[in-house]
Image (cartoon, rainbow, N blue to C red; front, side):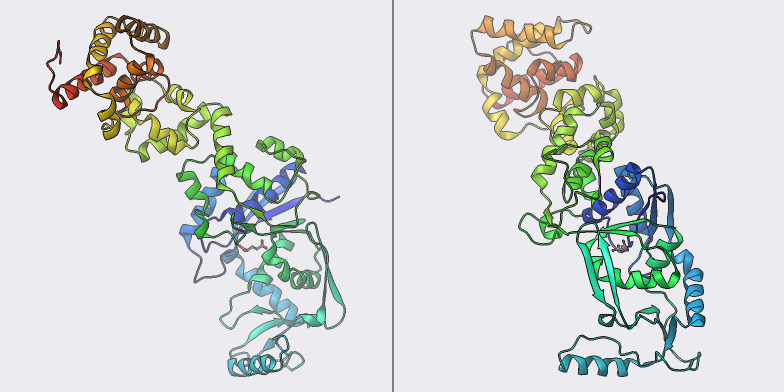
Length: 482
Ligand code: GLU
């Protein structure tokens, strides 16, 4: 059997959509699984709608996801000579012809067909005419076979049969000299020796036409797999209405590529009941025999659940760089990260149970880097007169702890001592401290929270809380040091 070669062929006319990513993922997985090659091809022939910014975003998105390509990125705009050469050759071989039909004639034809309730299609008016005047505006059309049928053997849809008489003569080169989508795809798939075409089933109607073009080229017909649409949870085609559809938005929202790929691999393919797939698992198990025919729904809750799973289980070093990016997005500077008492790995480790995305991770650990403003309700509830003796005792006792002893275990014992001495429950002690250190009422265990912030900063914040209570209540302080 020939070596497997797959491709991802996005048009840079929009963001990298998660629906396209699934086609890219399956194509990539199949190539990796079979020890084949994966080609990236940018289909930028639509000169009005294609932009460099979208091309860059596609490439960045693919890199972020780790969907590495072995060849490319090829750009169709670099291959116009090749497309024109094939059109010329087909004209000479009688496989194509120049069509001089005016827009008026084609409009009239369509109107008649519509009135007669027959399928609108070109009627082959110029098909058997002699070459016209080349200086006059014209298109080049393919001479689609008139007889017989085309069979598409599709890994998802099975055998699809279309009669040739259902298809008209496709335009290959437009009046402006630009090649059309179906023509360029076919030449590229043939030249790039693509063996498996895995793409969305919005392209299924193009496939019989493409097969006829491939036959004209004398190229082998690839195996096709047309994937059903990805839907929103409401059963409608996934669109902006359902939330983010672009890959970059998920990255910015703190999702990991592992989670996104895991969710996407399950939307249209299964391996028993298995839900969690590392990339290695996907490569080991992926096949074209278990693709689903029915559309699958994108589920943000499931994605978030998977994301949390990967935050909890991936090696923490792997999360450091995207975590730092998220920290910056919530206003923590690079130098604050560098000067912090603890490493990003320690922060990630302390918060991984509670943060489902890296954005949440940054939001809930921002206090490690600088003191956020008190949440009004939290301060009103916990920074109260009754908390003063607790905070004052704590400042006294924490001051005595050496920097080397500033560990969760020692801090825990110290706080425990205060609860016993003052005869109050742990919660009564922990919450004022938590608000003093983090500005709010949720954080890892209080000893861990203090350990992360470090001695100097912790004492500074506790004293600030004592001042705050003094300023907001009519209390005389035992002692306040600055
Ligand atoms: N460029 C096409 C698109 O973005 C895909 C073509 C194909 O996969 O054959 O929809």
